[in-house]
Length: 591
Image 1 (cartoon, rainbow, N blue to C red):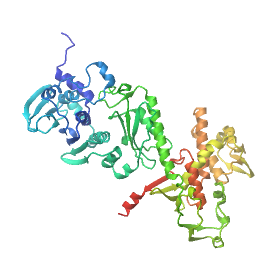
Image 2 (cartoon, rainbow, N blue to C red):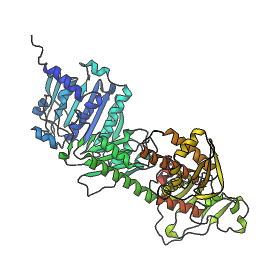
Image 3 (cartoon, one colour):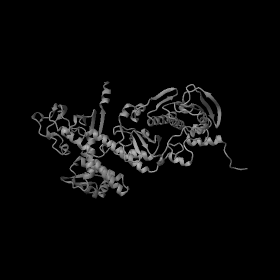
Image 4 (tube, rainbow, N blue to C red):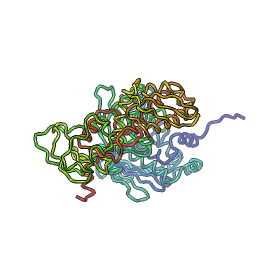
């Protein structure tokens, strides 16, 4: 007796369906794509019991003829291709067919359809289909378009139903998929129902940014920036990305569309995140809607049975282009926010600022050393003794360099007005980033300043050994040190920013870092140690929360930040700048 035999068609289709349909969201995807290819301008999705009992999609598309309605349930029925060579240039999702055979193999499907060009009083056609068999077929009264009901999903494949995740997980998969279709088809009216309740009504809008306001919330949509475009590329990249103040804790808000198809692609994800390097705090992710229009012959959408992934002929080129555009968009946005106001002909009115006035000699002189000008000009006699007063700022700076600075908040944040926005700068985070970038370029092979009295640093025996192993590295940073017994170091010179407690903490931290990274590749270790020590030096040297800055110092810090690379976050990942639009303030005051 032969051991090899042919499976019945119904069983073969169940197995094939397992490659395409693993969860209800996959049924939704196939049916939504069919509705869009049918030129629908209104699509309603009904989900009962997370799709296990009912998935229904109603569209107002072109509808189907009787012959097409019958053919679409057959295996290998397709409107996409005629030969295998057509796979190289697929430009549509696929109009009916293909997936319906798989869906009908593991559920009970009812299709009702009427073609758009038929008379108003014409009848439509209904077919009930399941497990390779037509259960019922008849003429019915129905509107133009197509209405597909998928009932009892996985009724004959209980193993597949057993592997479904929790109801909320399956619902989220459906909802995020539906949102993706809404984003890429802003001219279509979408409605989503869950267990008979309308949960999303998204009428047509002008752009994906407007759609974001419908899908998520107003604040998220207002944080979206139009992605800059490059007309020199052989393909088009467009869309919206969140600014440096808006982020999420997961990647689910990163959406990619290739020729309007929602796809997953690791190269695109990497390209987007590379564009946000040194912009977002660690383990934070942007909101993005990225649309790539590319010649169909340059991609392959059939690398995955469910067509969720896409493969580019030249993935590196696409990734680099996306990363570059993201960087330029973020840079331009922040530059516009903290750049000087354009020159105007009117005279600015005096602004008021709360100062905690101190005699110049009593203010921490280390703050003075951090700026390129005298931060303590001669004060009027009334300002000689420390006290708090309200004084008008009557000495305007040149108007072409002016910001509408309101002053310091909590002696920590610099506030200024720009283009109908309240902009807030964390003075420590901003100054830390400014100094770090300077140290990275200017503190290599520098001579330190000889200390008037050499400083002794107490360490453990192991720490002294670790630091002395990197003695040449410290000397290139301007730090001249020697061992002093088994548990001490003597520092004879150091950069002027490091003195006393700061120097002690700096050496201690460096010793810990060297010990923790023992065994790392020598080249990589040198790079990481360089970055770490410069980060620590910048942190110790920067102005602190609580330091009082003059108006001139605030201007200087903003100008320095505007000219600094990677100025979105400090070296520890905290944002340097935050802005709040006037509309948000007015909303808080219910205006």
